[in-house]
Length: 173
Image 1 (cartoon, rainbow, N blue to C red):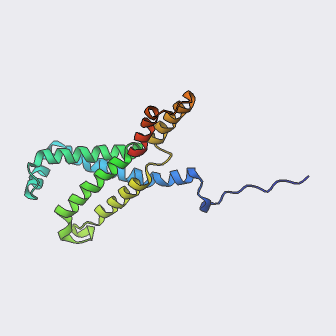
Image 2 (image 1 turned 45 degrees about the vertical axis):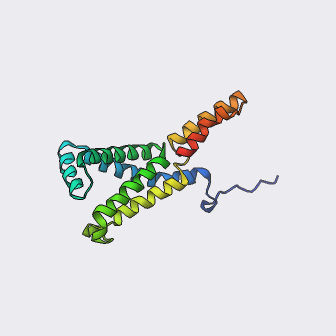
Image 3 (image 1 turned 180 degrees about the vertical axis):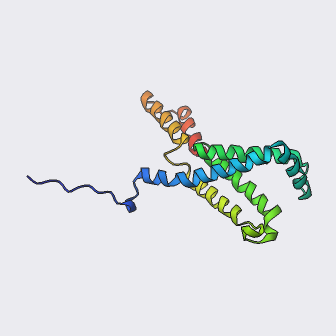
């Protein structure tokens, strides 16, 4: 009796679960970082201090801009961790970090230990990866997308009205 050759999957063949798992560390680290930044800005004492700093940088009125930035960072972090609307939040991270570089860090050069923009560039790079690739299979987005597509298949109707839900999910990533 002849045995069939063992089917061995090599890492370089990149099974889809491995690809999705590879998206988790950057998504989770970006999310945790953005949550920490957002919460820090929204604390009462910090809000006033940051409002003064924003106004010194020419971002006026400071308090509403600090609130908007803090909420944006907090929502982007939660979204990144959950893996929902990640493309939209990746854009928000890119914008907030670009403003931080332009207004605060550029004059200090690249080195983060000297107040430079090294860390901001790393956050932008992670956000760009998320923007281009989406959240992956291990995400709330993917779970919702599977549910929408199952519902479409169950009804055997792929009318444009029904496709809008999954197209919107695809766009949000």
